[in-house]
Image 1 (cartoon, helix red, strand yellow):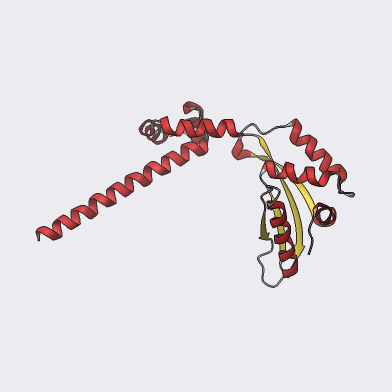
Image 2 (cartoon, one colour; image 1 turned 90 degrees about the vertical axis):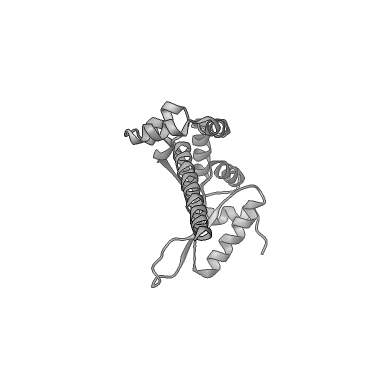
Length: 192
């Protein structure tokens, strides 16, 4: 089977859609997904082949089963959710789709008008902040009732970075505690 962008555009015209939604986790940014649906096992295999073809063009997607009820015939979605992948996919489809031409063009204009505000600059800033965050102070602030969003604002990073640091610190503390207990048990066995 030969898959190319014209072939994918045909499937998108018939069985595809673009969804845009408000992403509350990212404080008002918009999430955009491209979805192509197919049913039955042959449909899943086809969507996986399309996903593999798009991966060669640096477009990341995943195939998921939509209906979990075993009494219904299986329905599968190919979902492209990462913003850079959505933009790349829509650019490839823009000159090839017929029925959904306006939707593709409008979505590309939308993505250009509302650029991602949490790009690599923020990711790099978060990585740098993680190295210098005072975890003890964050723990004290969190115990006093501050939300993750308030902590992120105070320490100038993202809420997910705060959560990650607290989980990492908790994990490290428990690992140290377990190691001390294990060492103490070994010492008690040796002295007995």
